[in-house]
Image 1 (cartoon, rainbow, N blue to C red):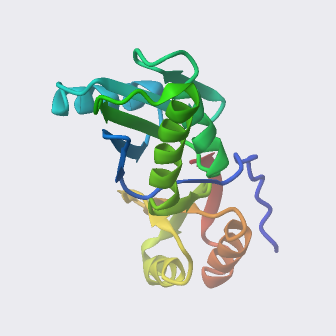
Image 2: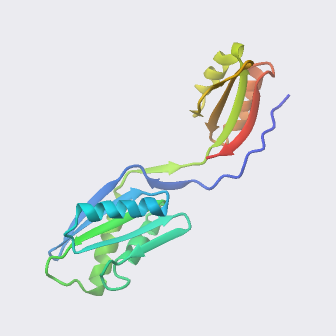
Image 3: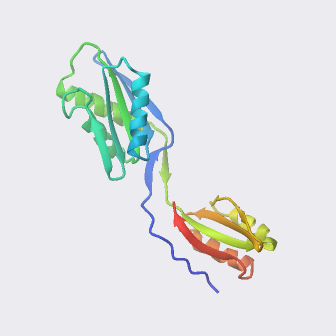
Length: 211
């Protein structure tokens, strides 16, 4: 008998940064230090900003922008309106990444860049930082709760080794083991069917949630 799973709708995959990244440039005597890092919430993004303000307390400006799904914010931090934060936000969109915070720290070098020059400096430095940063594609997973008797533990572990699965914490019961397993949605039905086949229908497989 085939296994029917009601899989939840998952959010679309997105590209984000695999690790924090830095890029620097000197433009007309001013030093621009760009920092980009993944941020999954506004408080996380603002914590990154606070850390950089502490690290570079003597900088002239700490301009920033973040994009976290539908949420976004930016700041010119004293630069003329629209010359820093907004170009940085456009750089995030132009690089096709999400859940990202970008901070550009400027040390003024004595030469005014003008409105257009500031837009190019902040937007360009942010874009280059993001362009050269390592990336990762984040895809949603579904979590299955698998139950097997003690006699079928080896079958469970063997099947887990054949798919890209993230194992949760085992829960031992009088009848056997319950184990949360997170899989990509395209792998879940075949895994559930293989689990039932390997245990002659003795395994239980239920959808718990998505991550």
